[in-house]
Length: 315
Ligand SMILES: [Mn+2]
Image 1 (cartoon, rainbow, N blue to C red):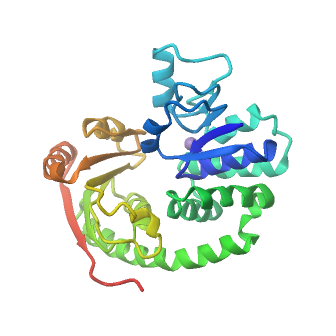
Image 2: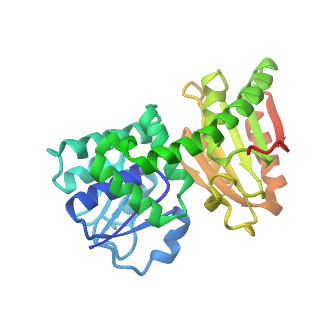
């Protein structure tokens, strides 16, 4: 049995764990959206939490963009399970695999549901950070999936995960200190629309925490641009493509703001959800993209722009 799942989040790895519960010898490919173009000719038995691949026998997913594309082009087979209203792909997969009466599986699905509906729990947060840190390392993702099979949502009883969390959390604390300084300064100036341009020295794993903090303290839209070229000391695999010439743009929108993050990301060649979206642009096109971002946001209010060049080393 050959399976593809989403590499970089809780839903994808929980889905891998569900597959392993049922099919321990399944071969699982952990793919990011960028890997898809190289997987077009693989005959997967199952593709989870990813868009439907041409030779996939079954697709289990909950992304609205995938659903729209599949229905528009008549690609839906009777076996596919694509429901854009499902809180996670794992919540569909547990039905598909007939694991609904398995207590461990149910608790894992709850983690995926929390992660993919933007809610917060400490356990989901920890698991998400460890997965993101290793999102380019399939062997480690597979190891994490097996830990989930064995421990269920008590995964922090596992020594390896416990040590990983100890190692990573120090680094996230530094990110939080930096984020608090940024957010406090900006909100003092009554700026609710913010672009943060990361040039150097911001912990990559803490970018989403910066966004969350800004929104939670009353900001409306935060766009973080990651243009950092320095190596990441704690999650080195995140920066192994040192030649990478892209600026990664990540957009978060508060619940009470009607700015459409997805439509905006699509104008920059990206995509995602209304409240959380992203795009990648060539570094050489960055200033053009920045101009677009500022003019779009300024329709809504004053726009703040901050560059982060942090020379302080974390360790
Ligand atoms: Mn998902």
